Image 1 (cartoon, rainbow, N blue to C red):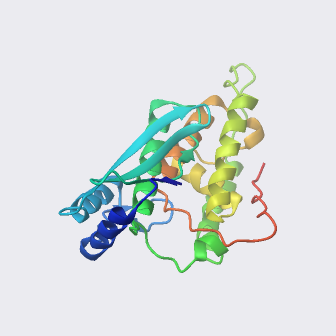
Image 2: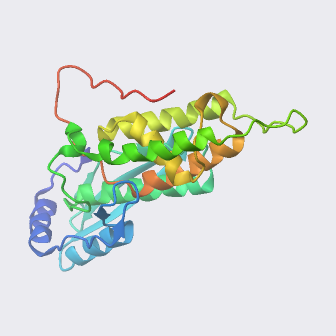
Length: 249
């Protein structure tokens, strides 16, 4: 975080902002957790209403590269004072227009509400960070249809050409995105993968035999889900790094 040499006037009007701002409406539903959250338009509406009759204004710088989409939020004051918040980078898969848009929307929403101290997601009392929620148990029934489906698979006829298989590079990109998503939210990697496959409407997907069509469907489902997922809860400070959750492949 960077700031001007003095921030007296900015902080004074931030206090005024806090007395008159209204928390954004939770006007959208996350398909991953079924919880309500505030989309980007609701957060912007709340911020712009709250800075009325203050000297505050704001902007967001957006850039993208091979690492994903990076967003930085900056708060200005009429006095010339400012605060630049630390940039947030979100992975964007293969970098398609849809994936870049989803990553940018999530990063802008998360950094803007953080900068102004807004709450855009349901409070789960820290369960997402401590992994105490019952969500894994709720997701387990999704695996039963997959087992029944496998029993109905008919071997392909030798005369039919095999579908193109997803490349190792494609699967590695998807794997890294899944790991990052699960890690920052304290979720079980198996449940994240199972949920993404369920959202893609594909039935069972075997990682080692994933086709290009399956990879594209799973990747699209994941990036749509990550764009509307609730913000990750702050992780407690620990002496040892948190181990990455295991994935089923």
